[in-house]
Structures are given as C-alpha cells and as structure tokens.
Image (cartoon, rainbow, N blue to C red; front, side, top):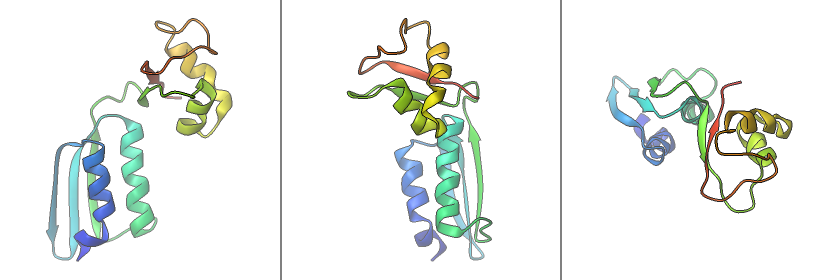
Length: 125
C-alpha cells in the first residue's frame, strides 16, 4: 500500500539510474536507499517524496547518498538552449548563467555560444 503511494518516487529513481538502490516495505513504512549521481538528482528525489508525502512524511525513510558532490549537476546541451535558460532550470535564476560559463571555460570561450551535445558542469553555488 505504501509502495503504491510512492510509486512515482520509485519510477523517478529508475529514470535517474540511482545506483545500489533498493526498496523495502516494513510495518507500514517504506524504506528506500541508493546513490544519486549529483546533488541535483538527490534533490529531485526529495522533492518528489515531499510532493507525495508532505513536508515531513512519516511513512517513508529514505537514505539517498550522492556519488559526486563536487558539482551540483551535469547537463547535456539541447538545441535551443542558452546558458541563462539552463541557469534558470537549475538555480531558478537566469542571471546565474555566468557561474555555469566560468565552470566550463575549458570548453566554452563565449557565454553566448553553446552547442547541442556539449556536457556542461553545473557548479555548486
């Protein structure tokens, strides 16, 4: 029953390819654990847990670790994107595009020129 309630969390974990993940239901409580690639992906999982169960859900215990906390996320550029659009997505603020540009100076020479397929580091702020 609890597992069905949190199915969207489990589906998201699969989509994000959470490593060493497992799920167990015991005494009406769902226990989930695993390792997310980045803090951003861990945040996505927690946001979904809170969306389903409320701010402090008592029917789930989640232990989500992060494989690489040296960056906030990694992003593959898609057609039509800009650094400001990417900054808005990850930080909620388009004006933080320069942080992304500075973190990717090894592959970017101009913040106005990015190409589909480029793998960008989204730095911790």
